Amino acid sequence: MNIFSIKQLLTGTHLLQEVVISGWVKTYRSNRFIALNDGSTIDNIQCVVDFEKFDESLLKQITTGAAIKVSGTLVESQGKGQNVEIQVANLVVHGGADPETYPIQPKKHSLEFLREKAHLRIRTNTFSAVMRVRSALSFAIHQYFQQNGFYYVNTPIITGSDAEGAGEMFRVTTLDDKNPPLTKDGEVDYSKDFFGKETNLTVSGQLEAETFAMGLGKVYTFGPTFRAENSNTSRHLSEFWMIEPEMAFYDLDANMDLAEDFIKSIISYVLKNCGKDLSFLEKRLLEEEKSKPQAERSGMPLMEKLRFVVDNNFKRVSYTEAIEILRDSKPNKKKKFQYTIEEWGADLQSEHERFLVEKHFKCPVILFDYPAKIKAFYMRLNEDGKTVRAMDILFPGIGEIVGGSQREERLEVLRDKIKALDIDEKELWWYLDLRKFGTAVHSGFGLGFERLVLFATGMGNIRDVIPFPRTPQNAEF
Image (cartoon, rainbow, N blue to C red; front, side):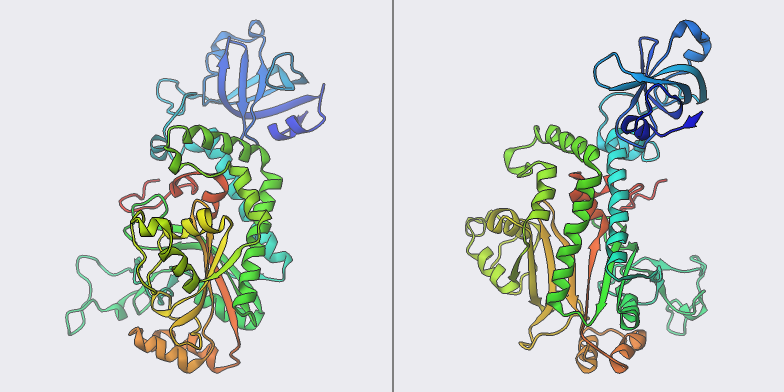
């Protein structure tokens, strides 16, 4: 007898075959109809039980959440809502679920409630759909880079360098927290620590990836990164996944071309392969938005928004031009922006980015040539001495989704920038070596994976697109 997944049974040609299926009970009604789901698809399969042929004590164990195995014949369904169903011949209960205490009962649960039950929320339709889309996006990312001549590299999770220069890092130490060794000056003596120096969890694999790009040509990282930023918002996580390609001999224009092609390719992949899950998530979003004021609703349904990104060329606009547009915009003049744009050099906020995408250009936007003062030290300085070859990609509903730049390949310029920021040159000796031995124009970008999953699923909170969110005051599970 063949063991199938529910997805195989619903999409294949197995009519009148004897089949075996295992899964979790969604509902059991009229002592006869079991809706079973195994996670392979958002759809349940109906299993029809002739209760007169089964022991009553066994049937009592069939409750929402119970794990069961059924075997029987796949037949055309007589009822509405499904094409096929299983006429159950045998039934085994792998593990019961007490209806008094099992929290995921067949009713509407708030997302806040489900975050407290993150170990069980994957059994809901919403979270199983989100996580299948997340998995498909992961696959599409690897596939895109592998098919385009990139090599996958694993950069260190424990590091001594702060790639962003932001200083919001988690320390890694084995020193006794109650009685650490001290230097003569009374500071903690990290030379006695496990690695002989101060180390942290990585905020980015970029600097190390650059070293590989300068030998392998085109590389990418896809791994966890950590920010000890005390931001308790719907867009921030303390632990999240980053995709960071680095390319030797690519200037900023080539970098922007690659980023646009990459994003369109992976979103096309989920549109093609995750139709049922996206359709469910689209309906969920429409339902959720009914209670929101018109101004806060998405401009377009989920799948239309995804096609919008795939079908439209991204508009490329310099930071300087964007500032002029924002300064002259109605919301700015009427003080509708929380952060009023007054002068060149302002750091753009999400509200400004979304205005450019959703209201002004009405398509995805790539901003480039930002003021050096608001960007990281490794970005290439332009000839004007005040802007850098940086680019950010802005999306509807989300703002910035990609940040990248042409990297500074000139040794003296990089040295000056490190000095100006008071970064210890000794910490980056190896990074400077890249500029001494065979330096060349090179570029890369970073894409926060959860931001992409957020966009692709239409979810409103980044904590709902990662299995176990890590946020300030929360490291449960």
